[in-house]
Image (cartoon, rainbow, N blue to C red; front, side, top):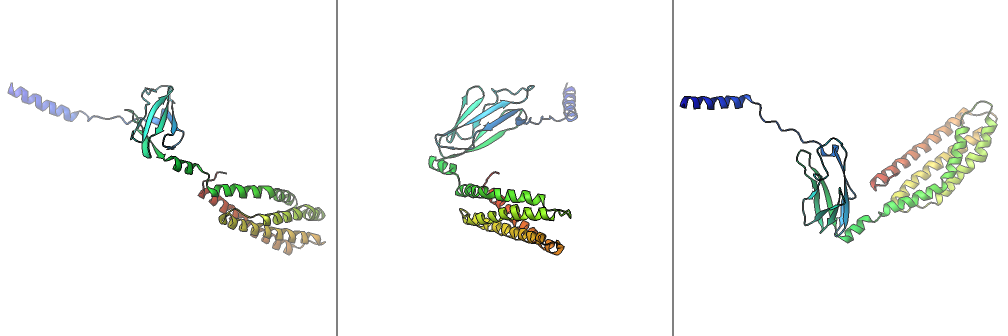
Length: 265
């Protein structure tokens, strides 16, 4: 009997060694089967936000009953059901806490939320002055851009010398391109940007369009002569390229300003 018991224990040990170790299945990605959308991640004390929960997969063991969120700190946030699958999160006091979806078999999803005092929350909602300034400046530029558009359209149509269109090109430069681009420069000089940062960029824009105006004037003068001078036009094109370079600097500066202050196109 004793020998049998020893043999049984030994066999059990061998059997255990031969059996594969327990394999735990990886948790399924929760957001592959459900969408969770917060209306905001910042709320004032006493304020609320909504969480919308929607099932995405049809063939899933996930249910709305399982998709019940919890909060990491009930002294800061509370959660309550709103209808069938939505939830209302209320800010109790200032601080930070998380809304947590912790469902066995699925990956845990955590959503940080900050609760601010009412004064701090209202201050956060205010549009930054730099953004207001950008809108003001953009509106000023938009009011004069028509002169650039008229001049550019005529310029594109009369850039190429066909050998027989000198008179047509001169007329376009004299009657349309030069007058409108001159008007653009005159009106741009009147613009005063609302802050020093934008004013510095505006100075680059002025440099660009003044240089391009010089190039256009040189082109018009070259077309006035009976014989077009390639040397004169090469000099004018070089001047135009210089203006385009400044224009690129202006555009790059505007893009950086927008990125810095979170301004969307």
